[in-house]
Length: 154
Image 1 (cartoon, rainbow, N blue to C red):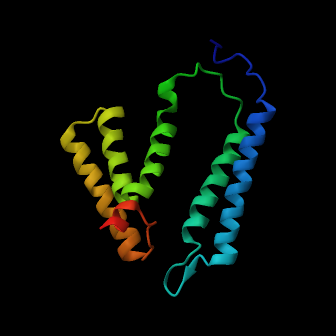
Image 2 (cartoon, rainbow, N blue to C red):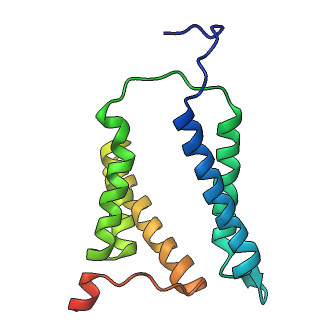
């Protein structure tokens, strides 16, 4: 392991290229949100509100990552990939059970299995997540969630 004072190796060209691509992706989303979709319209958030906020945040974080020294390489373990695996599973469930139930289930299982939170707190936070997601997107912003298998069957 390197001491804190030891010089760090330069960032790999691949890592820099991926981070720069993420920066460009975020900047494009931010630009579309601001100039094509409309950030704020008729006294409320427009169609470009979330692309601007998240695209701008993504571009900012990627720029900060490019500016920092290269991280020290760590050993790759399966548990390091748990967030990606969990998100892929949650996204796959969206088309089966719907957006809100899939994200609620994701939060519940993540808190219980990964964070080792007690069942009561996990259930309360997951329920609050599902309710707030429904209120924010369905009621306030009136954004339609993707169709799912359960809604077509019933």
